[in-house]
Image (cartoon, helix red, strand yellow):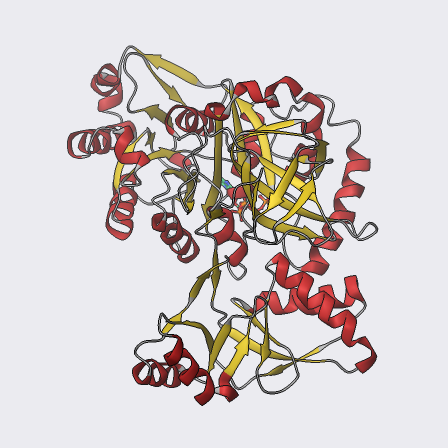
Length: 545
Ligand code: G4P
């Protein structure tokens, strides 16, 4: 199975989906909407693939005969991906496990391009954190974890690659506890690691436990105590120390507490190997048993209850030009309440305009299928021509506004230079599209005419230049701007804001929604402005609406 990759595997997924599953009568209580957070290379892709296999969403049979054809399709796709420099293939993967509908939202893996990832995390109810057993908590994991913590998103940890030499399991648990300030409870425990790897045992199980080395090698014991006390194992040079570690963990760590997990204070930890398919079923069981169904969505004037009758949802992501021949533009909408039906009219609260949603889609990686019904927790794709933006709230009529979808202050600012002045209109449209998609932020200086673009990571700049050329036929150059950072400015005291704006015209710009943004040359200038205008708030994160 190891030679099947995710792209191949996903293509088979559509054939064996159970259409029945997505009917609304399964209800939001049957949904588990989650994302995987990890540092690049920890094994997110491999784990995703194995989750799909293990749940039966993809089968091996029938995959082989079309192999050549699929390879070709895949490499075509990857060419676009390479040109765009980011992963664009799979945004949502929906599959069934244990009578539940699991919606796995993909987060772009690139360490440099994380704004999209942050927004994805606002649309999930729980997350899986994948850690490499040899490397422990890495920079990107920590960053993403902090975002999860802002919303107290419950996290299940998968310690991957225990088939390789890794750190001692107790040491890994200790690192999770100390660097993330989380309680930990092991779900499985490894017996040896690397070449000494002998299998995992279920820690929390009442009754019989299995020692699982791979899909074929399982040995059952009457209980965990019986396993730990087995004299041949206890004296074994590999099992002995592992059992000792297990006993220390059992004696010192708290028992699993579902409330502590759901409030984001405790993480169950599965030790496993995605590649060897060890612990993957334990992980799926942990998701289906512990992970919460859709939670209330923070909104104004009041949180949206998933059991509410009125259909509501919000746009978490826009993908434009997925297919360069068709200039399509899809808004990914997470439903937050009600039973959505195809053909419904929904109102975009930001613009006040109604739209008939006649071709909503479910996404199965690259595969799309018309969605007839969907409930809270589901992600549907709505094709549109620019009417929807990231952060928009859709309802059947109420003026609710979903909150908590952040924009981040750019950390790099560049001036856009357009050599061909005839293309100024195209440039304007393209920048606007890409800003709506969340690829870049666009600022118009109060004084001067050239556009400024702001990004969080350098890769976004490459993506911008290449997409402008490939998709809009506009060649641009990016020049250094004298600014280092930007802050949205805001105050309760209108006169004070006025005074600030008048005095700082040269350093002010407007964002896409015409909000004032202060551009600072360096951090000293920013703190100087903050000191001089104590009534003005300078914010690095802004909610979209
Ligand atoms: P990512 O999406 O988080 O970036 O990680 P990905 O799944 O691509 O895995 C990164 C590398 O780690 C891959 O190796 C993958 O095969 C390997 N890997 C994933 N899970 C395990 C595991 O449980 N055990 C071991 N030993 N390795 C694992 P690669 O050499 O970069 O690619 P490939 O040639 O194997 O495809």
